[in-house]
Image (cartoon, rainbow, N blue to C red; front, top):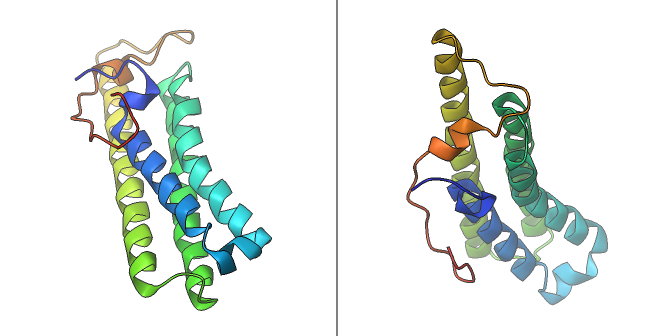
Length: 155
């Protein structure tokens, strides 16, 4: 499958699910009252998703990779904030494990996509075909994945 829009990117789909899970946790009564942590973890989860989408519109693969790295770091931030929620007893051990593992899967998918884009860009340079500055990121359009179906998407 070709990636024609950011919603086709598996890492974005995983980040969307991570965001959904985080928002679900923050609706719990005690968590909902901790406005600082609630906002911080929601922002981090959303950032993982939004940076992938924003990076998709980059004009070069190196710029896209920069945004993907921000998204990856946001997944790690979610994991760290989950410890605070666990320590404050806002979430159960099972909820912690579920969302922590999902953030890890999301980060791994982003890392894999970064490696692919870097390798693709290096291969193009070796062949003497550097990307034009105003070109669509060709490698994104040729990166084949089998997107996972996530509830609420039409992809």
